[in-house]
Length: 225
Image 1 (cartoon, one colour):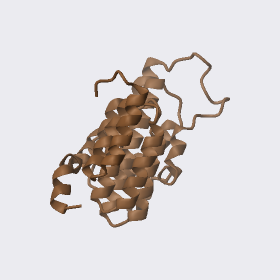
Image 2 (cartoon, rainbow, N blue to C red):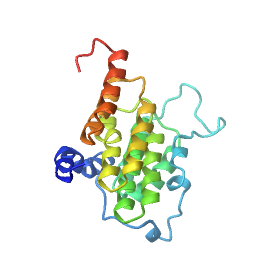
Image 3 (cartoon, rainbow, N blue to C red):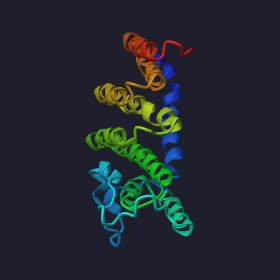
Image 4 (spheres, rainbow, N blue to C red):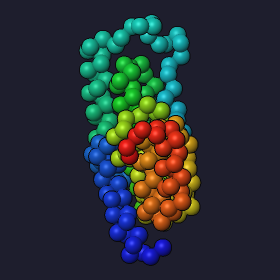
């Protein structure tokens, strides 16, 4: 691929880091995970963020139908806002701990979506620091953690941009692998399949873009896009 053409066609993807940080909340100065304060114990989140969606044991959960008290919900929202001010690597650990608690469904979904954005931001940091293996795995974890009912904003601004971000950071094969993983997650959603097509077009893989368009058309032949 002509490098000049690639830079021009991928220009929107160059802003993906800003999108990641904007979605996951403003980040403090990037810090290496080895510099975590001694008083803060590490959690398993950075190694297995998928555990973030685990709920408390049945005996610890609220009774069915019982909603969080307004004061409790306000406190949870305040805590989440504080977590979102942390550096990406620390947000991942804190969000995992936060999601272990009981909370309203809407707040839980919001926290999970912030987990996805935080994982992606942390992955970007690791890749730029030269830790390719860690960065690639964190991107894959971000895709795994993304909920099936994620918002369109999260998918369009973060998840669908991850393959291009990997490619721009020199991880060509990992980028196409990640695009395939995302496609499998959204294979029944025509709009999200179409959102992946620009990545293949920017890579001059028009056959792959056409394949996604055909799959979307089969799912929703009446959709103008």
